[in-house]
Amino acid sequence: MEKVKIIKERLKTAQSRQKSYSDIRRRDLEFNEDDWVAYKLELPPEMSLVHPIFHVSMLKKVVGDPSTIVPVATIEVNGELSHEEIPVAILDMQVRKIEK
Image (cartoon, rainbow, N blue to C red; front, side, top):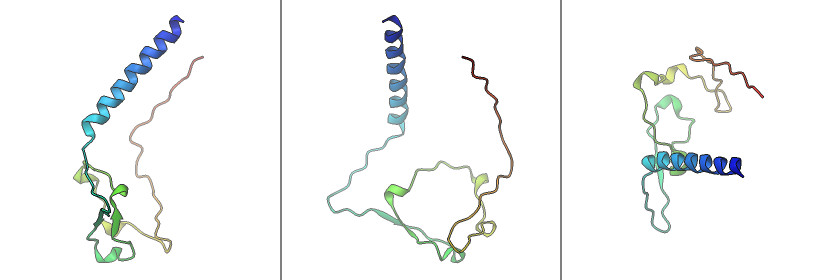
């Protein structure tokens, strides 16, 4: 019973931490009935094969670093409108030993 009590306390602490973390980043959105919220993107001419309208549920808020923006000219799109991602460098590596 002692271990169960400790586990429950730790789970409650973890849940509280996750809730406070998500509450900080959450923003209230209000929609009216029959709202169809979508964004039309202004894409460059070389991306004319990509559909420019996206539903709001597909978009995510990005706080980006301008140095990570990839020029469109370097992205090669095949006939299926997909591309192959090639890693440039491994930035971090960790080896963990799990003990039983």
